[in-house]
Each structure stands twice: as C-alpha cells, then as structure tokens.
Image (cartoon, rainbow, N blue to C red):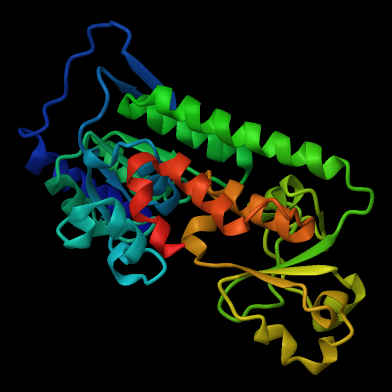
Length: 338
C-alpha cells in the first residue's frame, strides 16, 4: 500500500476512535488570537498559546528550550535518549529527559500517529519533508507546524513562529536581536582584515571529504566569521576528492566532532597549508555548535577567533557566554559540558 494512502487510512480510523475526545469547535467567524503560517504554507490558528506539544525535529526542540517553553513539551523523538550527542545535554535541560520519562511517539522527523494522539497534543512540530505524516495528523484534527532550517532566515523565522505559538515572543525577539547584533559586530571586525583566511569545513564521522557548500547553514557560519569558504560548489553538503581539497589549499580546517588525525594520517594531503601548519580546529561537542539553530553564533564566533586570534578573547569563555545567553538560567547546567 502506498505510504500516503496508508497514513490517511490510519488517520480516518483514528478520527472515529478519538472523535469524541477531540470535538471540532464550530467556526464562529471570529479571528483567532494566534495565526502562524508554517514552512509548507499551512496556517495554524489558535485561540491561545499551546500547552501540550509533541516535537519530532531536533532544531525545533532546541529552540523551545531556549524560549523557556520546555514545560509545554509532552512528547519527543526517541533518538534523544539513544544519542550520546544529544542525551547528556537535553538531560541537563529537562529532568523528564534525564529520567527518560518524557514520551517518545516517534523518530527525529517522523512519528506514530496513534502514539501521538494518545498524548492529546495541541500542536505537533515536525520537519517539513514529513508532509505525509503532517497531512494524516491534520486529517484527525491535530494542529501541525512544519519547519525547515536550511538557511539562517529560516532559523530566525522558526524561532519567532514557535515563540508566537507558545506565548514567548518577547523572549524570541531578545534572542534573535542578540544573535544578529553579535554577528554584525563580528562582521565589522572581519571587514578590517586585509587578507581573509580560506577555510575548509569537514563533517563528522570520518567524512573528511564531505564539506559545506555555498548553499548551507555552515557556509553562513563561515561568512559570518569573516572567512572564505574553500568550497566553491553551490550545494549543501558536496562530497569531493582528495585532489580537489589539495587544489583548494585551505589556510585552515574546521572539523565537526572528529580528530585532526583524520587529516594528518593522509600522506597525500601533507602539502595542504592547513595540515602542514597544523591549523585544524574542532567544533566539539557538536551540541553547542549546531548551525541549524541560534547556536550558529557559537560556530561563527569560534571560527572567527581561530582565524583572527585576539589575545583578549578566550574562545571557550566566549562560547560559554553565548550558551548562557541562549538558554538563560538552565544554561548554567550546560557549562561544565563545554
């Protein structure tokens, strides 16, 4: 059976089962207090901020904790509990995650309709590419907000949308303004640099030839840091050959959660300037540098200071300051993990 048809069939059955528990309110013609349009163009209309949310997409989950709206979350995706790159950090932000008592009705970007319905959510938040699931949930009367955060404006928009939906718009305005001001300050300093560093970015898990193209959030981080992206391809995450990396000859390499030995052990790369001069740096732990969240600022700030060192700036302390600002009081519990 086609996946889309199967989801709609299940949705229809769930409508019959849960119809009494979730009666549809009559449309009185009165304009709703909250109106948001999601990434797929669907309109979410609410009388008041949501109280019960199922969140199946990690950048959105992260944003909600920054907005101090974590208490509204009643369901998450199961990889939060299974991932060493996520669990230790979210466990510091939410005792329910630490105790593994928060419901897990799905995976990152996907979910089980019946399990979601059992949680009686006011809103489900998911990745825009999961359109079949979103359609099936809407068919049983569940409000769904879909998002994507592939460009920096989408990161800011998602933050504002989630804030509007949860009644935390003042907090979102404060955080987005802070990030934009910090990025502007960084850009102004970088503009005074006569010769910009050329930087190559490598993704995690040994994929040293998987890089950040010019249509990616990490490219935005590199630009914000005031460096030149060594990659010339207009893609998100292109794979390249060793010969291409040699031809680009970057001044600096930034890695995502891997050891520089991944490069140093490759003898054919020995003449690359960044490798020869041991200019390889690591965004680690990756939780603090997720470019698909406001923590893109952490990535940009670190890269900026590695490329153009300032003796008065301690890179780690700067990241700590950013995390404390983004997470508020709960950020203090994260600082020992940086």
